[in-house]
Every structure is written in structure tokens, then in C-alpha cells.
Length: 133
Ligand SMILES: NC(=O)c1ccc[n+]([C@@H]2O[C@H](COP(=O)([O-])OP(=O)(O)OC[C@H]3O[C@@H](n4cnc5c(N)ncnc54)[C@H](OP(=O)(O)O)[C@@H]3O)[C@@H](O)[C@H]2O)c1
Image 1 (cartoon, rainbow, N blue to C red):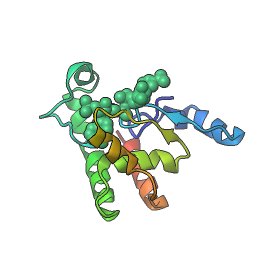
Image 2: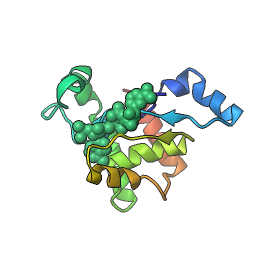
Image 3: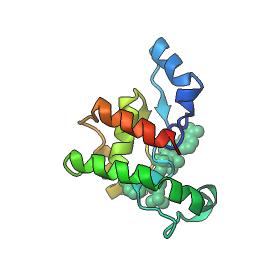
């Protein structure tokens, strides 16, 4: 299912809870919200093509606090990137994210979401800030 910090429907419609109850692993597609959660896009630098239409300048402005939080949490973990933090948040939720990558650098960076874990407090803070968007 589509699941990310910018698309939390699986938490709201009961699918995630039901998966947990039945011992089913939820596969999260578009876990980086098509690149938005990497922090590289902004109102001044919107994503190209159809993504630019889906995520307009207003949306990009609204998510800025979440991107700042991803950045600061990543710094507290020794320099993890916003993308790595966003993927780790999904792992903490019990999902398996399947990020897309356009090149080897992106694939390597995304693999860096593995092998460490956000604290419960960080997960809660991300829940709060993304829940207000
Ligand atoms: N089963 C389904 O129904 C379904 C539906 C949709 C997608 N998917 C699958 O889910 C996967 C992801 O799809 P998605 O593209 O929507 O989602 P995504 O993982 O949210 O975003 C991937 C895009 O973000 C950018 N990116 C990824 N890693 C990055 C990094 N470390 N640094 C900077 N930019 C990075 C790249 O695009 P740019 O460099 O151009 O920004 C990349 O194409 C794919 O395997 C896709 O096939 C499945």
C-alpha cells in the first residue's frame, strides 16, 4: 500500500493494525512520497513533471517543518539523511518500505535506513508533525 509520512492512510483506515493482528507485513510503496521526503524539493525547486502538479508550491511550503525535523533527527543519529530517517520511521511502524532509486547513489543512501533505529520519542514527534500537515 502507499504509506509514508505524507500518506498515513494505512494507520487511519485500520489496515496497518489488521496486518499487525494477523502477522502480515505491510509493504510500503512510495515511501519517500516520490522524492519529497528526501528534502531536495522546495517551493523554489519543485519536482519535475507530474509530481510537480501533484505537489504544488503550497504543499511544498506546508511540509517544510517536517523536512526540518527529519534533518535534525538525522543529525542526532550521526548524519543520517532525511530519506533514511523517513524510511526508518516506516520500519519502526513494522512496514517494509520499497523506495525507488534513479541511480546507485540513491540506492546506497536508501540502504542506509537499515541497521539502526529511531527512538520511540522521535517516532512520536514525527507522528505529531506529519499529522498536522
Ligand atoms: N505496487 C504499486 O502499486 C506501486 C505503486 C507505486 C510505486 N511502486 C513501487 O514503489 C517503488 C517506489 O516508487 P515511487 O517512485 O513512487 O516512490 P519513492 O520511493 O517515494 O520515491 C522514489 C524517487 O525519489 C527520488 N529518490 C529516491 N531515493 C532518493 C535519495 N536517496 N536521494 C534523493 N532522491 C531520491 C527519486 O526520484 P528523483 O531523483 O527524480 O526525485 C526516486 O525515483 C518503486 O519500486 C515502484 O515500482 C509500486
